[in-house]
Length: 551
Image 1: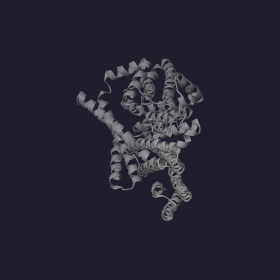
Image 2 (image 1 turned 90 degrees about the vertical axis):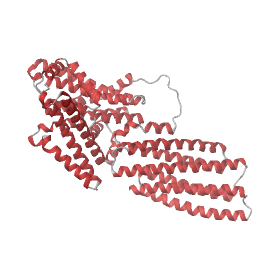
Image 3 (image 1 turned 180 degrees about the horizontal axis):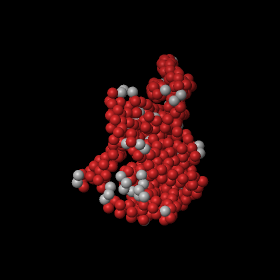
Image 4 (image 1 turned 60 degrees about the vertical axis):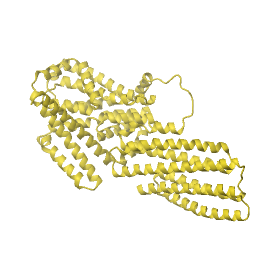
């Protein structure tokens, strides 16, 4: 096989390895489902639990870079403090060692070699995907296919470089990196930065080690560099982000750089006093052992100094001296919370989107309250405020729709797809609620323009109708937030009350017209207001219906 053939085979093997790693991660994320959402509450506990959680999430999504980018997104969205982020970042470094142990399985025993079981796993997994209608079983099939492709990719890479295991160029290159720790660290960091995955770069190193092409000295320094290179992804993701997000990325860099420096000095001393060990070949399993020990020890040593790293991050990323005071509106908060970095994990992204849909609902309810006051009190200022809020609600709908479209293109299980679909429907209903509030504001302006006043009876009837619509929408938002069947029942009850009340109010209004207690012009405003309020309660019932389907 020529040089190009070897190169193509190696690239193909790397592609299969990366595909397998991503497919396995997607299947694991789908299987985790809502359980991943429940783990979000752990963020607010303590750093030790954060470390465990960070390790668990990284083991699932097979990427410490993705976990750290997600943490940067959480900090940018304001749902996690820097102190809480430190624990997750430390745990991510531990979790990424899982991939290296998976890669080294081919050295555990003859039956664990890729050529024995990887094709079988792909065959079984794909058969499950094709013939099974059960979404849970299909997720297991995805995991098996990913697992199989991961090992087949490793085997293909190994086969491509096997004929060159005794080539002097490799021995000289690794000897040079072994003698020059800085060069080894830079090489590891550069490769990891380019392929944006420390798991993949360590997998490549382990493939070379399996063929006896890497010595201990070179492997140690390259591995340390790989841990630094994985920080590049988070640093790139925080460009244009809030200062707190940049500080989270800096903490990740500090953590790995300090660890690499300390371990680099210690291992350099060991190799000076034990040269035969330094030049001895290292196996794939031994790389996994070192990688795990490094990350565990680094976490244990630096855990007491998390506060110091937070303070250092403030030194590197300083506050703006020209910050102007101002009111942060709901739209700005929503834009900040819908951070694209959180899309690294679909479960968390869905939870954030759901929270922002509730925020939109609360804005719509507030607007209904203001619109009610505007039409009852003939208040032009409140009518204008309703108009401004309606414009904000429309912009919220666009932001949420765009974010949900991105989520819908991620790897989701059936439960998550249903929730995303219902969130699409919910924001549409809330936007329509905003439109009806705008209509109420127009009716209020019409009353003001003609200096019209409702009769006492009409005023009291309309107040009762407004309360019924407010109750329906309030319970619908609470149902969306808590997924509580009690709140769903309250919406149904309030909506039925609003429908009955609307019918009664129309009859009473006809009686007032017959008795000349109300003018025709006032009557049209009254009937239009009742109609808009009734439709608001209908949209509230729709929202409750979506929640009921999920329970």
